[in-house]
Picture 1 (cartoon, rainbow, N blue to C red):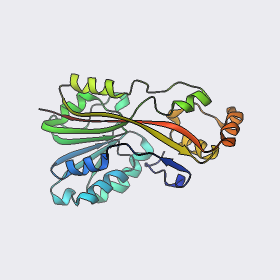
Picture 2: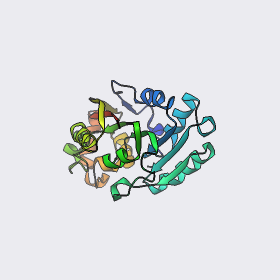
Picture 3: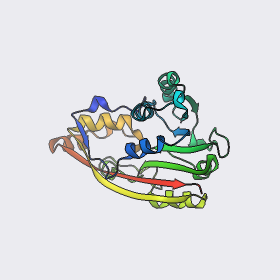
Length: 237
């Protein structure tokens, strides 16, 4: 995955939207924040859209930084965000690296579909600082693994676990909500292309090993799987 762009699947992949509007929540928080970090920014596309929507950036007194752990995306994010005066740090939370920010230096941290270390988030937040996150539940699209085998890589990523970790880090939970919906693929080819973009959904997936199953699915298209999302808003008092 380079950046975070599924546009070439437009018209072939449709997905329900969660009951909440995470972008709107981020925009509202950005209107009053002064020091912000976007964790796992991908190619920076979503961050740019948020800043343009609120009309704020480094030139308007908003200090913004971003992290990204996937090396190909670091290059893309730096290319996209540097013109906005936004520094992009190469940071992989799964390697146990501390966040590249000083204690209490941020009043807003955003993590959209990015793993996070609750204690690190709490460490970098200033008193009154807020953490907004929307996550993909680790049990999402269980149908894929029923069809193609394998186990979820991140089955522990759930609302209950994330909420517990944030509380243990000393943060107060303002909002905790989960949601399920449908993702619909036009045909088996679209499924294959999607799994190439998000290989963690079916680790080790190979077309050659699943031709018969793909043909069965294609014969009954469209193909639906279950989406699972949750969101949390936490505050450092």
